[in-house]
Amino acid sequence: MFRSRSSKLSGSAGMESAAWWLIVAATVIISTGESLEGPNVCTRQETVIVGGIYESECHFRYTITVKVSERQPYTVRVSSLCWGWQYGCSSTTYRIEYETVYKNQIVTKQRSVKECCKGYTETTKGDRCIPVCSEDCRHGTCITPDVCECESGYRGSLCDTSESSFIFIIIITAGHAFRYSW
Image (cartoon, rainbow, N blue to C red; front, side):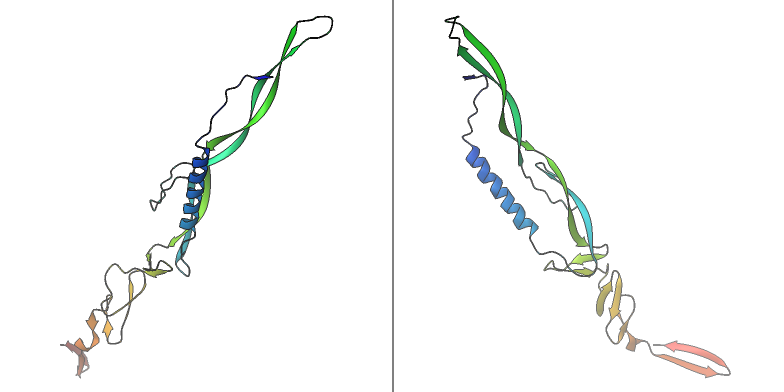
C-alpha cells in the first residue's frame, strides 16, 4: 500500500505544547487577581480575541494561540497483483482516508470586567472603589464624586472655611436688621 501524501515532521511539537501551557498558566494568574467588590463597581462586557491581539479600553493586551483538531481527507493508492487466469497483471485503486490535523484558530469570546463607575477610582489595594473629588477636601472627606463632607468647625464646598471666621452680629434698630461680619 502506498500513500500519496507527504509526511510531516513535527520536531517542535513538544516545544509548542510547552509554550501553550505557559500561556494558559499566565492567563489564569492574570484572571484570578483581586477583583473589585462593593458599591460603585460597574461591570462591562469586554471582547477578547483568543489567538490574536485585542486592545481593550483599559489597554490590556495579550496573545493566546488555540489549536483545534480537524479531520482532513487524503487519498491512498492501493496496488495489488492479479493472480488467476491473468498472471502478471496489476490493479490500482484509490480510497479516501482521514487524518487528524491541528490548526491555529482565532476565537472571539466575551468576559465580564469589573471597574469603578464614573467618578470613582480604585483604592491602592485595588479591592474597592472610592469617590473622587476634583479638588482636595481640605478639612473633610470626599463622600461622593465632587462632594465633600466637612469636619466639625469647617464649611464650604471644599471644607476650606473655618466657621469661627464668620461671626455675625445682627443689630436690630428701629425694625431694621443690619448684618456685620469680621
